[in-house]
Image (cartoon, rainbow, N blue to C red):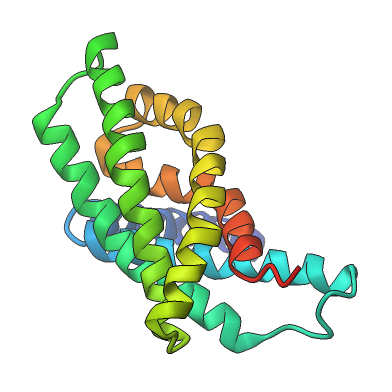
Length: 195
């Protein structure tokens, strides 16, 4: 009798938990979408840096995990997340649908407008967080912008084709951030390339 009651209560608890998680997810990806997008962007920027630092530790380029560096990389996700949230919202309003013509327009805008803005925003944020002088910022821009933009062309056109064609608009930035995790590792590498 008691084992039947325990199984029943366990089923009820799982059902209630599942219902609560579904409601929370619906709120996160509708009512609080911008906060969700920014939170995901900051978190995955930090995770990308942690992965890159682990690689650098294993290869003896750095002695230990630099928490300040990870915190700075997480903070770079803040403006990128905000830009991405409004960019995708704007793009889907101005170019609705999934036709080939719409897809090509979105891909071109993404590569020629959003990518340079996002990369520049990242580099400006890093310069601000590191109290870089204008000369240091200018040198970093020359050294890093092109490397990041070339990598962007390798990663993003196929990823964004999938995003714009298959992914629901409210999940676009989530998808972008998941794909961006690998790009964030590379971004951290480029930003902290001491060679």
